[in-house]
Image (cartoon, rainbow, N blue to C red; front, side, top):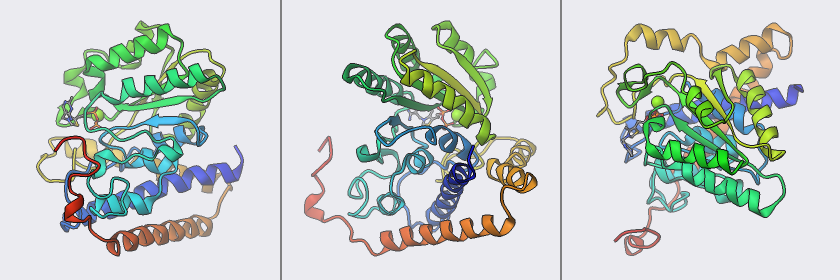
Amino acid sequence: MQKAEILQIYTTMLTIRRFEERVAQDYANHVIPGLVHSYIGQEAVAAGVCANLRVDDRIVSTHRGHGHCIAKGAGIERMMAELYGRKTGYCKGKGGSMHIADFGVGMLGANGIVGAGLPIAVGAAMAAQLEGGDRVAVSFFGDGACQEGAFHEAVNLASIWKLPIVFVCENNLYGSVTPAKYAIPIKDIAERARAYAVPGVVLDGNDVLAVHEAAHEAVARARAREGPSFLECKTYRWHAHAESGAFADFRPADEIAEWKKRCPIVRLERKLRDDGTVTQAELDAIDQSVQAQIAGAVSFAEHSPWPEPQDALEGVFSQ
Ligand SMILES: Cc1ncc(C[n+]2csc(CCOP(=O)(O)OP(=O)(O)O)c2C)c(N)n1
Ligand SMILES: [Mg+2]
């Protein structure tokens, strides 16, 4: 991979990290209302997969969607404004974290209903197949979503119709407070894909280069109209299920500490420094530029107007 491409992936991961750090801080300070699920710890999955996508490819996300939005090219100003509840946000400040979408960059939406994104992504893949060309769709979802009926229907349909889709399971070992070990009777969820004749690969989801390589193959397969693929990325979220404090974190402290040592960003930094690809000064400069962009997004949100009371019933699906 060219240096510029690796640094682009690195910058995406760091943008997600800094964005989420700021969001967590603003949430704790009651600046951000609603419910927010942090993507910190899982950055390698969104960044590694989306680096293989074009702007006209489509992705469907989850309740933990900020990383997917950023990696697919959504604007962090409008994202931050949405989280702040401002009129300039993606949903005019009325949707919040779990409704962010940007069709212009092929981001078909976060989704507050666990498992509901998979059939939407299958629909996007079907549309891509019907229109000809080589567009693809990617479905991001968690281990918890794999316990929903929609998961099985989606993977099966994609398989029998050979749809151009990549299923990306982010197995972060928990669905809210339920350990995957309790809820799932098999070690690797990828086994389920194989039951539907979809090739399933198990990956270290904190190794962005491994994720990128596997996604590269899966996306190429979809572009060549050879059918769906399934990537199970083993990873970990650093924060509790959601920022609200309503979800106590029952996970063992030593487990959290162990996974923090496998930070996907630090791992890539170390590799790039060790093999002489970058200097620490280059990495510092990227961080400074990312931090400036986050500050810009916050300033945009802070200086944006609130929605008008008379618009309260516009753009909503129930009244
Ligand atoms: C259909 C449905 N059931 C339950 C919930 C409540 N809920 C929100 S997130 C979540 C856990 C999802 O776990 P997973 O798919 O592994 O994603 P993660 O939160 O780990 O990223 C649950 C049960 C929901 N939003 N939708
Ligand atoms: Mg999970």
